[in-house]
Length: 177
Ligand code: FES
Ligand code: FES
Image 1 (cartoon, rainbow, N blue to C red):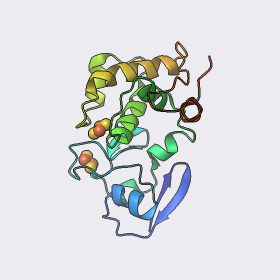
Image 2: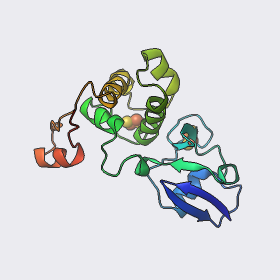
Image 3: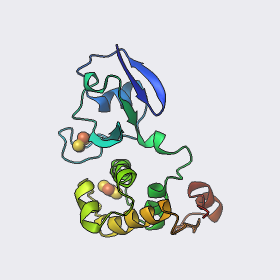
Image 4: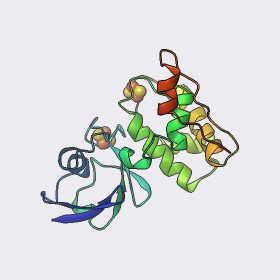
């Protein structure tokens, strides 16, 4: 039995302790927001936070997570209101979305330790692969998220093309100063 805290809840995994955290989260905890891409640490789709650091969950075992605090995309916010989530939508830094949870977790971990990251720091902290190519908008989205977190910017619920205003309002609640 491996005991750890996942999204603020104590969890006991009755699995082989050599199981990668990725599969414990997806198959046992049903936290399927964490994606499987390459399985060898290259793509970053499986990124979660472990004790506040962005780590590839395909590369760490349950045993290595004993007693540690894991946050997945499901636990980052309960209403998609984390500044990174809001900014990614507002800046349209998402296409197919498969890589997005890992990128969001990498960005959130960065902003937790660096309130005003430079472009170089963002690129270094988010080496995640995205086949759709959102890179051009990603730096701007993370810098906007940082500004929102510093309360120097707000994001309104402007509807994205093809999304009804009422749906957009539910998906992207406005942050107030
Ligand atoms: S699935 Fe973990 S880095 Fe690609
Ligand atoms: S948004 Fe499609 S792979 Fe990243």
